[in-house]
Image (cartoon, rainbow, N blue to C red; front, side, top):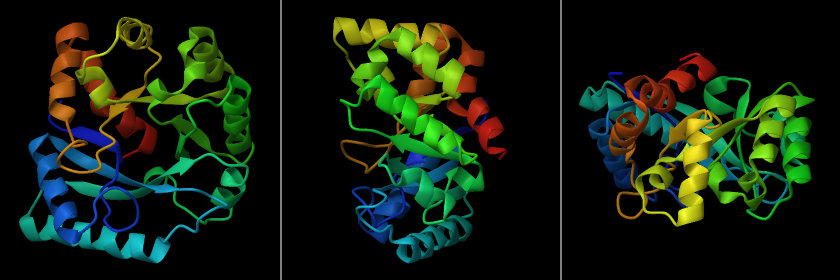
Length: 238
């Protein structure tokens, strides 16, 4: 694969705990280019029903990212999106148009509190599904309920949940049980895609290239390509 798709990236500045300034955003774009990323979905945090999403600032700053890409002649595209912290209002507010899906698709990136039960995760997927949206669970390695592979299987088969793992989880050192769980999730095909969840250039940077190399070494190039871009392009039709 000549380029990667990062569909979880806190690129847009001044709206969450990701990029804080225009310069931060520009540097993150350049870092992503060096990492081989050609397509970024800009998934700023939102908390439906608790804090209003600053859609005007988000849209304006996303436009500045596109202008910088054009000015520098980068072979890169950026798309709107968000990372939704699930609340009881999330599905309804999405249907009412209060925040964007991933790249204008019918898919939404959803995160949860780490201690949410399997039943709560299933109810969340069902609530979006009833309104015609598919769900991609963000950084699934964080949720205790998903340490049970039976729960993972049920969410995928009965609720159509797609699952994203962070690149740092694959790259970084892990304890024995986490290492074993990550290996099973990957080997059994329960992870649909990886994403950087990049927030900055210091402790949470874009590290897609290294992740692809590690996946290719362990599971082969075809599987690495699928997790780093193939699935994402089909899902979002980009």
